[in-house]
Image (cartoon, rainbow, N blue to C red; front, side):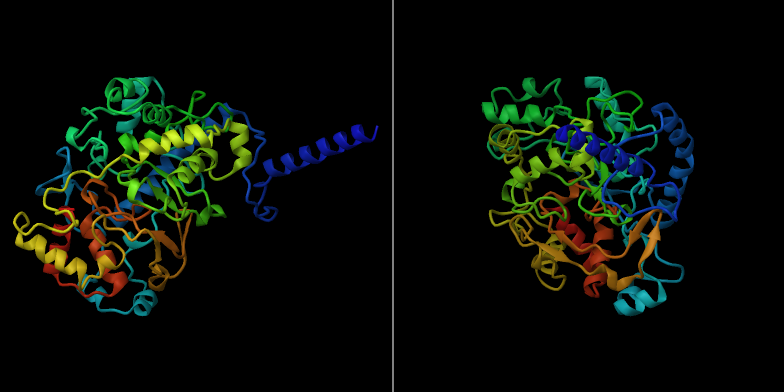
Length: 466
């Protein structure tokens, strides 16, 4: 009898908690701060979808207006410079300055003065998710179309579209280079690797463990927005997403998301999917999570990151918990052989070969290692120090709400490798910088470098050679 009363009481408590979670947004006055998402959905899926479809045009218009206020998003390719497979690299500073301001004037101001006068360029502020209060994975249209064609999976969200133009993203599909078989060059054969073709492409190149790891990396598993429950964001029940839906071919396609390790929602950072190239030389994983191994990263993504870092929701939506001793190991073994693209102008130390480099590239290298202080965090040969740094961007602006994103500070950010950097736009951990020119201007202000116009151009020329 005691056990029955205990079970009955526990069921009543759990039901009450679920009801209050579902009612959490009843009114602003009653709302209680919580780390959890509502588990029990009280509104029908069809009603939710209809409501969110109706709200979508206004939400997207508001976000597009923000992008247009911040950036020049036009298609302006750099002459004579392409990514590895031939896509044009975009040139020029795309961040718009406040009215009446110049880059030289801004660079001559102290952080306190910039903050006081409110002249920190809007494009240097944290970039919100297309719908920050909602969040979740949003895929570029070209990837949605390719995956639908190959596997019949639909990664379309009924409530949101991807926000950045294709010409400002990495080339698609990206090439694949392997540390184990550099003699083969690009092994992708110009294809997006999926469950349809991974065996055909890699059989005979990978060992059995690596091949099984790749299979798992292209196998869909349930995720927060793409699953079979009634709080998904796909019209039809979904098998889920794959690791390579974001890290396509072990690189990136620009897919965005929100980090799972920050609460409340407005403080969560937009995530720009980083490349997996060269993870074998890295010692930290995740832009801010500081995960200590590829195995930790691989397991964390499946267990929690797919579900906004909420293990309660993960259990509801069908979390895939990979076995650490085999599946995680196999996936990590394949990830560990993804190489940077060739850089013909670099020597064995990762420095420019004077016989191959231009005078401008050499000047840029000297600046990178000297006046610009880039090498303090990005030393050769892979151009990362494998640690984290806080740029203290909060020195330059007052905390402010931007389309549901509370812009206050960035905190410590992992030092990403700069090898092959021209293949990986946009830049910074949240993709707020569209070009390498933007990146140079950003760090010129943040570090107080006072670079000349020519020095900025030289730095960009050097990074394009990495």
